[in-house]
Image (cartoon, rainbow, N blue to C red; front, side, top):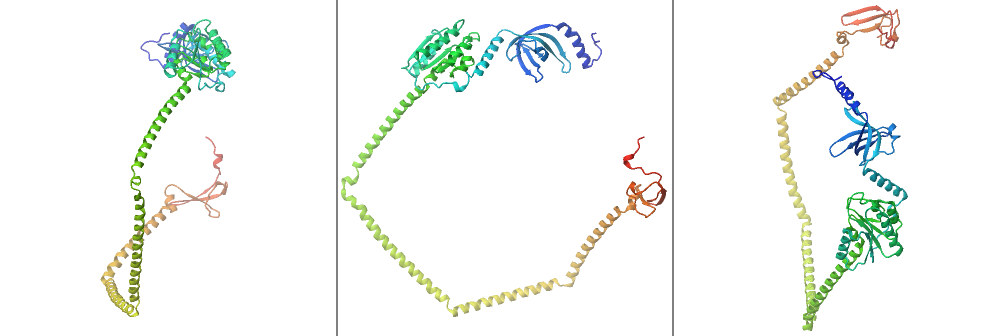
Length: 478
């Protein structure tokens, strides 16, 4: 039933209406698209999206349906799914419940490539431990590629520029189409049988996955793995990755880079030797020039033109030593003369008469200073003991002491009033006493039914008989 336009629907009613009118028309449909947003749950369910260049839709492959399909989805695969449309009410989204899923288009090639890579990984062909090092100084470079493509031209261009005296052997092969994989594998085996190259470069230009597929064949991977000659893979563009790149001893993003890698050590050694030769020649030239300058300077030195000048330094040294001795003796005499004068002054100061005179003068100074201080102290004490000043001092401090004592008394009095039991009884409380003994009743266990009790209130006392004792934990429910 279609809802009335003016009627306000709840979210549940609207969702149920859409579900009722939408699902019956799409209970069996086929949809083609690319797998994305794949999530594998621990429960065995698969949730993913199907997309094309303009839109996407959610899909779910439940565990019960996975037992009837031959393929499980992978991200990036083009697939054809069969199922039914379903509206998932809790989230308000519609999705395809997948019953069947099939590869479509290039997705099968991607799957085949992925499976072959996993197989080779299990065999250990991709293990870095099996990678061979490139020879540092290759005498011959073998190239397996098309003789008419841009690959061989790029390799030759790099080798001519970096190492003009190279030796290259080209083994022409098909690099695309039927029979290409077989030809590439046979070329690798031929180079190993003839042992006519130190390093091999396998390459071709870029292209689609189908164009590059010969380099994804297991036969080519096997030939590379069993090769005793190190192999550089330069297949496709930098973003293209093939099985050959994984199995080869080294991958180059382009054929030009592959050529550079093949002669890298040789090129670096030659460059180092050329630079070393230049540095050595420059250092020797500078050393020879400096030697000539030193020789010219030695030849022009006065020692060789006037031999008597050899003694001038010794003459100066002797004169300098004599002057130094004279200066030293004079300084020593001056020092002893000053010491003698100091001892004479010290002797005069130690004379008893002069010492006694000095002490008498100091005693007179101390006597005058002490008399002045005693006079000042007596005057100050007299001023402090005047009756009118003492009376002011006592009044001031007595007022302070009385105020502090009154405040303390008020605080204690207020505290006593606050803890007075009679004040608490005025708030509606009472204190129960047992008639026998006159003790305060603190618990229901202290009395029994039939006992008499006294209740002290703020304005008198009540006497009562206890009919029933009911502990708190036996409280009855009403």
